[in-house]
Image (cartoon, rainbow over all chains, first blue to last red; front, side, top):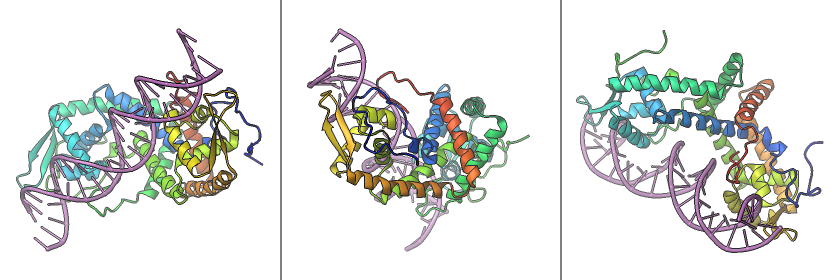
Length: 173
Length: 173
DNA sequence: CACATATCAGCGTAACTGACATCG
DNA sequence: CCGATGTCAGTTACGCTGATATGT
């Protein structure tokens, strides 16, 4: 006993039960995750847009601050952004004077990317924005609930992405 | 006291701390959501691919079964698939004989979409696949934990998508 | 020679927008 | 004339895959 309107009671006429999500989809974990992530992304993008930034910019700057200057390859591995896509991000950040890209004298293949003072100030602003975004996103939850959510998601993620080894040389994380 | 390697201890040399995600990103709820959703999507796609299906196909078929025959516009609202994109999905499903699209005699703008017997059988198969997928996705969690996760996500979603009104005529859900 | 780095060019999918003809 | 419906064309972002030139 559950879902079975079968082919019976139709709604060919149109305007009635309309616009309701079917039960089987409503509580599908994978769907819930996707939809919620979508809203989270929207919030994040809108929020960061207030500083003309996107998630990638924040990821790179935060990584630079926590680990210090690094090559683009290292940045790629740590942020989870593909080497190929990272180029554009680095270009943009460098173009705005937030980071600097200089050839590594020790290894001439590399670019050493480092933050500028302006980049550091900018990152502080982004940190605030990000904090606001998370708060907005998690608004309906109490603090313990938020912690629980983070724990549950972390466990799912750790289980499905066990410090992924990478065949090609890129990292899909 | 928390995160502050500042510009100090660098890693210009390359191979050392490499490949670790910065603390500020690691537990960011929005990031966790996005990443987890990404893995969930991957699982769903892989799983459904075993029956040459995608999420949209499942959504449409499940909706048809629960509400009976409906116009494409109604399907769009209930599934959250845009009217424009729904066309292709309906084409595919119809092409495989899983649904039927017939002009509505009562309202000549409409197509009445309904499932065929073959579509019903197919949906049963998809239902099994989907169940397996969810189980795979939630593997690391106990049943109460799974329920909790669903509850938390549902609350987030309900809060941020309060039966969204739609300006244009499409629904962004 | 095998490997890493930076870069570029391109693909597939998904969400989304706009326009348009048809019809109520 | 307004609004809904089905359809098509096109945009943007993102994840991901080569391939290539250079250097270790």
